Length: 185
Image 1 (cartoon, one colour):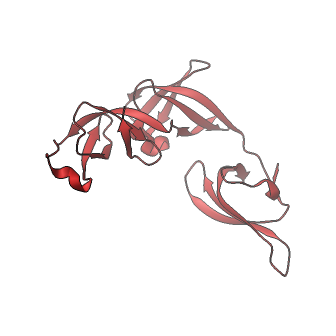
Image 2: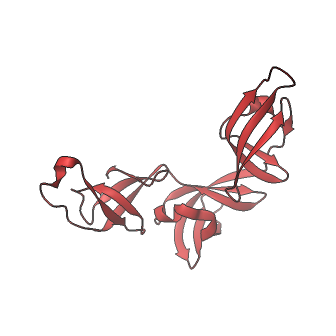
Image 3: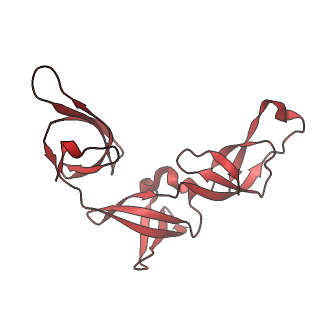
């Protein structure tokens, strides 16, 4: 069990049988009464954010979380198929669990799947991925004085703002946290 003194950002805790991660926390010691900890928690299964207050010294459960290294293989209808790198088992994960991660999935990409009580609840992608530009309009010469950008559609369907000199067929490094162009690969 975790005590409120051990709270920090990113700590995963269990409340009422559900896994949460701490988004924000603040220790408060009022002039009158006992100290307490005010937290913002994100449900790992649903993504819902809630605010909860704990008395100082209160204990919370440690969730039964397991993280496995996987490799993305292919899409099968609404499911995405991953292979566990240790056991070589195939995991079928529904598109709803992946959310925006589907925009960055490319064959053979390495990722981590988070399991709660043996059920997959999320996928952590690498910080950057390399994707090919599938479609973009040509940049007009002389438009670079303002640092302008244009839309580029990547091979996975993701639309990214890129500089005017980027052309179709180029490999770009994209940040999976923000969905922004970083550099040419």
